[in-house]
Image 1 (cartoon, rainbow, N blue to C red):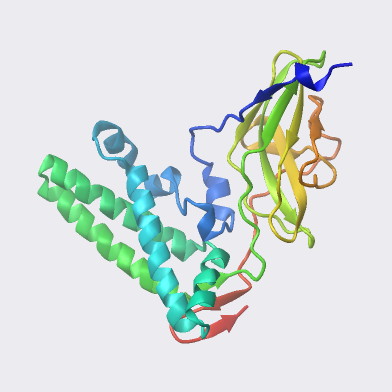
Image 2 (tube, rainbow, N blue to C red):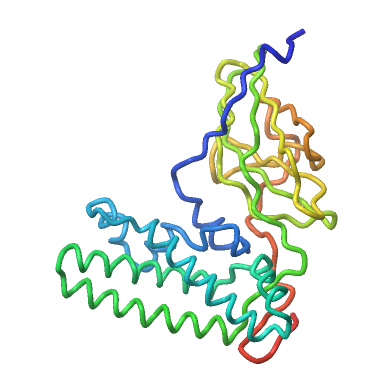
Length: 280
């Protein structure tokens, strides 16, 4: 029998690659999950951004964080002014904001505008300055479209899952390396956004135990989705795993008739607009 002292604790490996476009665009993530949009979204507006970001000292990821902070501030101000709640309670609504398509578009365009103004300064480029102004106007239009259609809110937000703790125990299992993501599940069976992708390294035949120390409010546990490729992740455990309980991963995956991980998460229960609150 292998004792606890023979275990080796592993830090989950998070991929540097951005989440796939299918998951990023279709998943209704929470605003606080971050980031609102990613490289695949930015490239859909401008295919040159990845090359320019590599060539220049400025980082588009840093502009994305600035854009996110600015958007959160503006949405908070709208919630304070339009929700009909007191200041403190209105500020708490920011945790319930869902990333709808207009919100993702606003973030993408604002990120690109901030990026191109930096490029214009670094290269002293009037062309890039004009590009930034154009994107700024488009971002402002996207912002107004969001506030006119409404900021989407969920009544019971389920946050994006973190990376799990992974412990490796020597064993004689079939050798395999899988990719995995986990998702929180609430008492109604609703999912939060998937965690970042991580590696499940069983190349030496080891057994892996995964766990999460704590769960968000109303969540009953988490599910693991694993597979050989990022685009084909299948449910690996039949029932949600409670906080503090280890899930022993077998390399014999997927389970029979296992569910493919779908990209949908939470959808808004209501919308707050400039002057009215519209219920779905």
